[in-house]
Length: 254
Image (cartoon, rainbow, N blue to C red):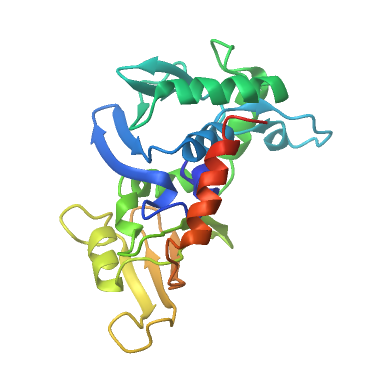
């Protein structure tokens, strides 16, 4: 799910549009930014749909997160997979926004929301993904619970991640100082235990716009995560605010 949500780009000071995360047993509470554009984006990239594709690779048959379904629950939108106990509760916005968005998506795509169980294509796609030697969920599911660690002090933050050459890339446009990130993702009391193997850091010098790079290694999996902070220096100027206002208007249209 993390990799699907990453492409939202720089919306605000909240990476991925996530204001806060609160883990509970079998439940992850995610408070999203109270903006229609964010809700449209999350529904669009997460909800599974059938894809007309002639490829023989089952991974090309489904777009979105296989098996994901939703329901209104406790003032928010509950995301779940039939047959599994884990749930994600999205809050911080009017749940009706989500329903308006999904109504629009349903007119344009073959959403699988109405299926009470996993479809055969979802099973095939999920199985094919699980047999791949690189398992992003082992790295990025724990990171999602600590996504705020990737937010810098600026007004616009973007976090992106993807699989790369047997490992992973994690990138921020305006991330936090490297010592802070290493503490939060490394051996700090609430960290992930990632080891910082090598870093090139300009956080604490006069090269304000120089990028920072850290090679992390997760001892539990042996995977490497190559992190970079671009230090774009993005600000919420009038052009950015106008873009977001237009995106909010477009959220409830096709």
